[in-house]
Image (cartoon, rainbow, N blue to C red; front, side, top):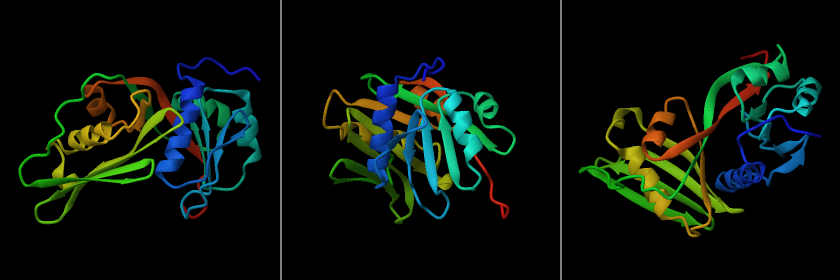
Length: 217
């Protein structure tokens, strides 16, 4: 099977799917329909497929799926994914698959009144920033495996935005990387992409999502 053109390195993409699963304590991705499948089996998601590039196999897979809570993720535009999946599928606003070289990402110290903490559990690092009153203000995770350092679930409490907390979390996570050869990778939301770009991250590809909504949605 020949993939259509994509700017995403398929080996790096596979490594990222593995690191993401490690970060979330999910099963290791397995090859399926030219991409990678993770059986998440959560209340909101039964299964997830990852694809580094558009492919006719995505259409074959989409046509075979009838149940909700199965997500298709593709490094392409929402329009491109919609053309492959058809009208039964709901398209979710596009994110962005991003990488970063070794350029500094800026200061990682939170402002006065905030406490930053780091915890490591095997290949997974978690960082939290709490306000001095105990409120969780920001947090994030990263996992390092298969030559990839994947940043995951970077979240800032809406009450504490525009204070540099996400930047502090990212800097702390970056400093925790063990191997200088591990590649930095993340998926950004539309809102987060400009922030990561300002920290030296490069957008490699849009990242589209499709799912069949349940009748109760």
